[in-house]
Image (cartoon, rainbow, N blue to C red):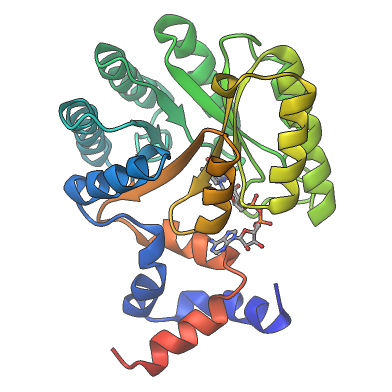
Length: 299
Ligand SMILES: Cc1cc2nc3c(=O)[nH]c(=O)nc-3n(C[C@H](O)[C@H](O)[C@H](O)COP(=O)(O)OP(=O)(O)OC[C@H]3O[C@@H](n4cnc5c(N)ncnc54)[C@H](O)[C@@H]3O)c2cc1C
């Protein structure tokens, strides 16, 4: 990322919300489930699978967490009714993790039970380091009972290689990503190439243990190295998948699908788009140009 873009990233919280919304629109499917389903249908027609995420995080009221659970229950009904190829992704701080872990686990359990009824799958996103232990605890408690839960591990976390050893191996499903939260160096690798190296070590370790991995990255270097590891381990097409975010590098998405890989796109929707969009903008290497254009267009 250029120095100018990095400077702009620092001042993003000062950019008016309306401008952030306009620039970040590409990362979000819309405000409603219907809009998300339209995006999913379009992705399916292009050979991609989807994972639908209800936007929202860090809730401090039980009513908001319960409303999110109800929304997720509707998502499963709609996926089945509309015959689209999608599972769901959930954030535990939206489901009340910061209120009470037991309350959150009960909410995840309701979602997992509904998913099971519909033959579907639930991916538990990983948030910042204050949630890692609890997220893994909830995953390990519920996965043996429901069998349709997956979790996320972050390659920037030093603990990740150890966390892989706690996985059951065959039957486990893990999305591997670099990690997006700003973490202290004591617990997280900081170098760009160090994170790449840890990503590939974690990927190889999981392949060797028979874990189903969602290889979540837009980093062409990692996509290339991961494809080589898929070949090295003789994995069949159904034994792994690539994953990408809505609105990021559609060309790489097409290339991976054309090469015969399965690929899933993360499709977030909902009214609470701001924190998610800010994280995406911080990673966009051309963020300054987009913001300047939106400001100059004067709308
Ligand atoms: C499906 C999916 C799910 C994820 N779930 C989680 C999660 O649960 N927890 C978590 O901490 N992180 C999650 N992430 C985010 C992830 O950790 C990274 O922050 C993010 O994917 C960027 O890392 P990268 O591997 O794409 O590499 P980078 O080096 O960041 O990006 C590689 C290239 O991709 C392009 N690019 C990347 N991001 C953007 C963007 N926003 N806009 C425009 N271009 C971009 C640029 O060309 C960049 O040079 C998820 C990512 C994906 C793809």
